[in-house]
Image (cartoon, rainbow, N blue to C red):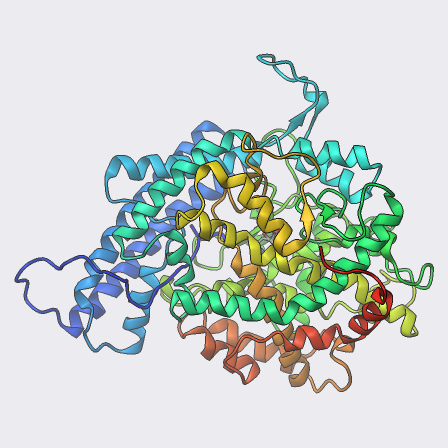
Length: 609
Ligand code: X8Z
Ligand code: ZN
């Protein structure tokens, strides 16, 4: 399907081992290859519209019926794509025009969930996938339920309510209860996930990949092994900054929770203001470097000024239109889900859609009126503006240059949501005026952007290891926590044996959305920001730039969006930045002031874990 989140492009330039072609068929011609991709584009347009319509309905109204309906549509898509990929192997080795060649490549890597061609197994896989996402969407923690009894709904809390407990940062035990409570929702996913891995690995092998992880890594216009090395290279550039942030935050947490947080070991995972410890913005009040020097609390102003969901989204749209982009279509406002419905289960995890691949833009969120969701609105609109700029292309090109690009667009714009911009909107009373104000501001940004990096890197490491068979089902949870500790320096707050399935408590695992895209996006967004700032003629340090209202920056962005997936991503990056390499230098440059501050603060501390 086409929701940014759930459908996915994964590609390989050539399958590792193509099955033998049918005997003695006449040699295929270039014209046949062209006609083949034209037909695939046409067929896929029809199938994808049907499946993404069913997905939309399911995600905004989870029932057994909508789940079965969505699974049936996906079943059809999977059957078609697997067969089309096999059929395409006969064009291997032909000298084709670049567009045809690229579409064949995009087809081969177009599925994040490849199915075996056996019809029963494929149907089973489609059902499993729908069920797992539904289990996550319906997830609730109900206190004190007796076995076999229906829970009292008044004692049940959903993801938003449990997240709020961690965001507020109450007592150690209160947070522990919320954290453990949320992690009960995934226990029953384990056997389903195990089977999903088996079946989709079979599917991946049928189309010439080693396993599903190998297929996922093949979607980046380079060999899968080279891609893995690339993610390591980027991570190594950033690890020292993360380690400094971790060290500083741990020192502050150890003061708040004496005896509970060691100042040399990993941080308990439930104390960082977020169910997965992936972004730490909520602990800002606790770790604010210069107390009382600045007021950066946008949430308070949004609520005081009675912003509602629509007004928040309008604010997001106005950033894009200030760059010279078109307003969102009228149907966007009619068809989107902004608010959590009270009468049914929905998938609250935010996503962006072009349901019919024809500028039928929507977002699906359960918006809270706060700064976090102001940022998420921009993130989702970034996806919608990508859709808006490429929907006239053949459907195989209706994707980002790679999936990290898609995730980086809205985020790149949020880097221009400076205190000056917020003051203009009357959402901040004053802008930070000295070095101390700047450090406070950078700390707040780093808690979101830098804290995320190891989580972004480790999520798919876990899945790659699971898909390759390196990690067996009886080690799922142990491996999860080993990686969480290795990369993030966080530890489970209580014993988490194999009776739990903690990875399943993070949306993208049951929803089967590859995650490396978000890691890439954290890096790419700073590259995009820097390039747009240059186009806007910005002078001075990168962290002072805002491209709000700048048409030159907007034109640059638009040109890249309009390319969709029609060219390899290094070409799209080149069009935007003049470089063909992903590079962590701009993100490091942006955080240079904070880096120096952290170094001083950590002097004498024993950093690391
Ligand atoms: O899933 C998302 C978006 C939808 S594409 C809300 N994000 C990741 C997450 O929530 O884990 C954005 C940041 C990382
Ligand atoms: Zn996204």
